[in-house]
Length: 143
Length: 118
Image 1 (cartoon, one colour):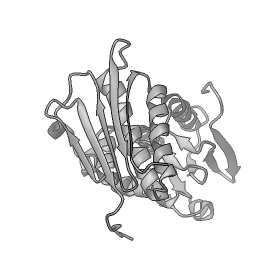
Image 2 (image 1 turned 135 degrees about the vertical axis):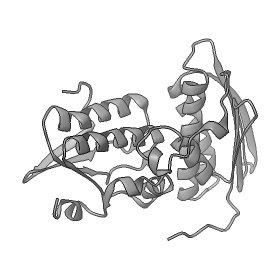
Image 3 (image 1 turned 180 degrees about the vertical axis):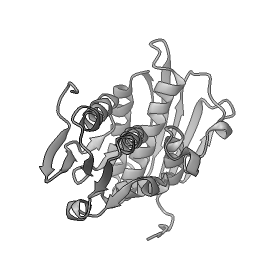
Image 4 (image 1 turned 30 degrees about the vertical axis):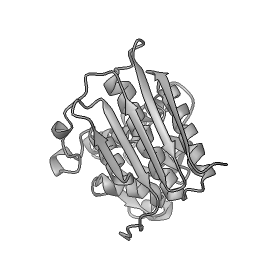
């Protein structure tokens, strides 16, 4: 197996299609023996990102697609997810951990992505998301 | 009562209802809807007041599932009942901790601890 692998895929606005891409990427990480903790975090981030792109970005529209680019090596995975929605203002998403927001839905997906990935970046419009995870960093130990 | 495949194992211990998630992954929106309806039915249709949610089977859950749990917590509080979560794996507990939902929910390590004094 080669160390580096990349692919591009375009899917319709269907969460089952999104989950299939998620499984493909997870398979690449497992083949490279990423730790269970890293696989857990990347899977969770991909789930949140793809559901956001399909549901909130494309509004599940039949005529809109999601483009996904993925590159994986033994220590680094990078996924770019582009939807055809109007985008959103990332700074306008409320902090879900504030006491007054704790019982409200929303904002948690982005927070989980940021927490589990090394780097999370949206373009200005908010319709392209870059997710990166490096595995060669020392683990933070909060316990 | 909710329709669709059963997603929860329901047990009763005294006056406490234990609802154990059957799925390993609580991700799919359809599943999350069914689980939500089954949970809400415990409070709204069956009038249960003391509920323990057992997560021992759960390996993954998404923020959409967290949303349902938050709604469930509100419904139980409105009914003046008590809700506890138990047997949450470390990975999943981290999801609750990051989102600070471990402050909102009453979480116990084991089902025994969750049943004690409920």
